[in-house]
Length: 160
Image (cartoon, rainbow, N blue to C red; front, side, top):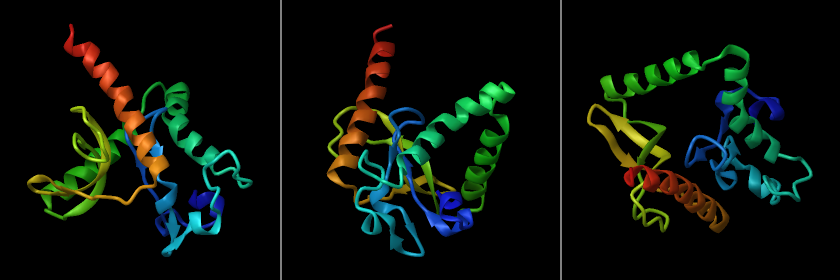
């Protein structure tokens, strides 16, 4: 998204929640540059009515891992860099916020015992806390759908 806006990636703030893949949830309501909320500038951001077609940015995120695998056969560098970043927060007790899988039962109306990616504060004790993001009703519905997708897979595994 930063590239599309013509700014450095560190100047853009945005989150993708849920599972890593097709049912991941872009938090359009929280996407911002220097505190300027992009949804306030473009109320249709991420929807089919969006003339700027930001939905394609999320599609690109979802497809990026598949593209790397198609071209390279694996995604080891991206995974290695992510693990190093997480390890640094844990080892150095940084209390830094990362999107990591955590138990979401009871959050956002999710009733099943599933793990989804949410922003969490990490320190040398592991997940210290989960950031309770203010989501729109649509984003909550998408997060529940992501949970249902994973629960369907998990439930089948429990039956084995």
